[in-house]
Amino acid sequence: MVRTAIVVGGGIGGAAAAASLAKSGVNVTLYERGKELREIGAGIFLKRNGLAVLGKIGCYDDVVGKGTWILRGELWESNGRAFVDRHLPEKAVIVVKRADLHSSLVKAAVDYGVTVKTDSIVRGATPNGELFLEDGRTDKADLIIGADGVGSAVRDSLGLNDYIKPTGNGSWRVLVPRADSDPTSKVVEFWRGHRRVLITQSGNDATYVCASCRDDDRGAASETFDRKVWGDHFPEFRGLIDRIDPALTSRRQHIKVRVNGWRKGVVAILGDAVHGQPPNLGQGAGCAIANAGALTDILVARGDVQVALREWETEQRKLTEQIQSFSNRYDDVVHAWPLALESLRTAFVSAIGTFTPTKMEWARLSQGVKQI
Ligand SMILES: Cc1cc2nc3c(=O)[nH]c(=O)nc-3n(C[C@H](O)[C@H](O)[C@H](O)COP(=O)(O)OP(=O)(O)OC[C@H]3O[C@@H](n4cnc5c(N)ncnc54)[C@H](O)[C@@H]3O)c2cc1C
Image (tube, rainbow, N blue to C red; front, top):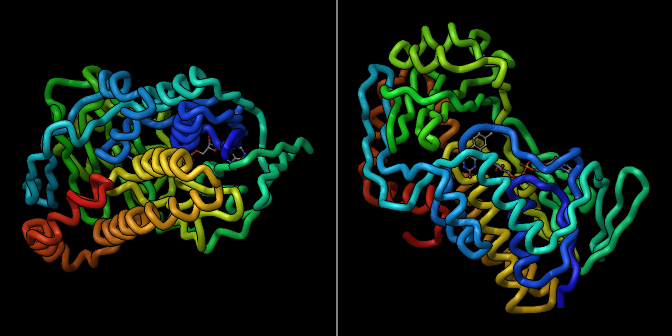
């Protein structure tokens, strides 16, 4: 039986895991290296897999009440024409502010009795459930979950890492005050060359902008967002781009994480620690939340930790890796397609977007579900 659990990392994945386990009666301690639990960043898409778990944790109404349902998705090509225009099912895609999602998960965790220890840098864990911190403290539990992000110390201490490498691309994400001309209840993704902007509504007061380019794009890949470069490249959105405060932006490289296992002994890893991926399907956090919820369900059903972890990995890993692989390929199409053949990219994406099997696969993986 699982009576005690340690969660390492208080990001979206760790907070979801802590809340979910504590709600089912487990005594949870969460270790976070930061001085407080907080989520920086802008908006975030949540889909069916993550939303279902928010429902079980009791955060659904709170999170959804602050977000915007997205009903339409458009993909624009260089000439400013929408070459994919898709109606999305109702209540399947929502954009919320990251801080709202995270604080709702943290509040649930604390309400269910999770003990939070901030300023606590974890060095690693052993398969039998011992935890070691940088400052010499140790702890022990029936279950340890490493949700400590792409650089996961828990994962690395157990030798579960295969590779952790940059994709060669990166992005800025930011919230700007809304204007009447901004997209409403829809997401617009605009590709021009190897640069991309994504624009969508996040609540009544904000528009969420995410821009990405290659790391070797000398004109655009600066640490903070360069409004002039991006406004010149996407003049259709100059008014919106001019509303971005560069001081609020910081470019993040897209990192791919590949592991040789999700668990060792009574330790499991989840979130970016296990499936770090470029942000193309809006599923990094979705998978983390979904896998946290599934782990709790299986633990409750099985009782024995090692049996439950084995079943959890068997049940969840395939879908997560399919999502990750699709997202990696999407990144290549956006950022590595030969520019001399740019018009062929439009034709290619249009074709696969209307070919029923790939359309269904896209719908399934972007919702993070086994069957649509
Ligand atoms: C531009 C961009 C847009 C995205 N958009 C979406 C989206 O729309 N939808 C979506 O689902 N996903 C999206 N993602 C992905 C999503 O943000 C991540 O998958 C998710 O936030 C990962 O959460 P996590 O808890 O696994 O990791 P993290 O958020 O990295 O949290 C890890 C936590 O562990 C702590 N930590 C690290 N090391 C230690 C240590 N040694 N000891 C103690 N604590 C430690 C950290 O301080 C941090 O709090 C996007 C990502 C990017 C870059």
